[in-house]
Amino acid sequence: MYGRPQEMFIFAIMESQRQSKVARLLQKELADIFRKEGSNLFGGGMITVTVVRVTPDLSLAKVYLSLFPPERSQELFEEANMQVKTIRHELGRRVKNQLRLVPELQFYIDDSIDYARRIDELLNP
Image (cartoon, rainbow, N blue to C red; front, side, top):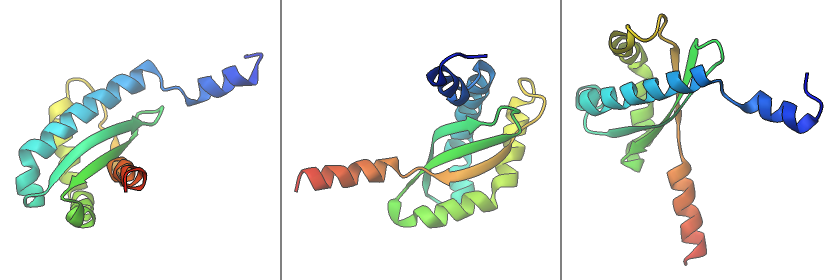
């Protein structure tokens, strides 16, 4: 196997090339779905897909969402979770020629923008 622990650690956290390609495809298509269908599904909120991570067996996709306006982020997040079957169905329709199975979708709130804004406020009073 590998001789040094550092090599094993790096190998364990790296995504395969297939995972990366599937994640990019899903991110692109989900972003397009949220952009085009967002007003119908979410009533005026803006949802951006920031990161997609796919499990090694490609059965689960963890989708990180940036939600705007921030005051409605929890409401938009809950609405996205309620619409997950509709979103997955539309995703399947779009990627049917590239993927045999459409992964299950799990949504997470990406709060990295809020975190960066908070750090900026602390550094620049």
